[in-house]
Length: 281
Image 1 (cartoon, helix red, strand yellow):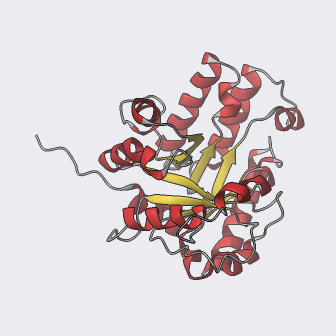
Image 2 (spheres, rainbow, N blue to C red; image 1 turned 180 degrees about the horizontal axis):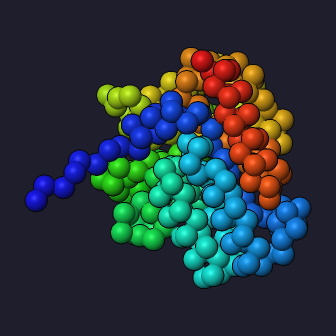
């Protein structure tokens, strides 16, 4: 019996963005947010928070981005909640980008990849954020497994935190910055892919003019910074230029602050998605 062909993450993401709107909602159950929802900072609160977000939004938003650290801090019980959150979100039709920012070498990187990118793993996600700062080549096990499983990667390239510039904008001997080097690697990974490659970059929406960087990597650009960090949907064309159609803006607090009311969560996510759709059209 022939197995069905694997549909690449880039293809699935393009369809989700076109049909559901280009919005990624973070699932960031940190203590202050749980408290604002009237929940305790414990497993019960974590589970209630995550279930509410997924039930309210999973049938309408394109992408969820759970931050693994906020689940891992509760140990094995937190990981169990994360597994259920991923499974419920994906079963409702949303794509899941696991925000774990893993990065290492050799067999350790391969183990990270198997955790989040192997279809047999209970934490299997549609894509994973990774750190390339042990050298882009260190990501090879994740790249290979992502290709095989139809998953994707988002590589830290030009992040929104101010500290990131000391590494990402450092200049190599050939005159190219580290961030530009990562973008070039991703463009090579995505060469020939249609409608969009599966290997994306994390590029902050708060960074202003990025015209000195070639963001047209034929892959998605995960863009944190909309909402609470100060960027707006209207800023996206100026920041991303011709690559703006492939931008996946991430909003976390801007949506989550409206919980635990499910209707308010849905209204906020819908409003952000429509503002972004209008800005990038």
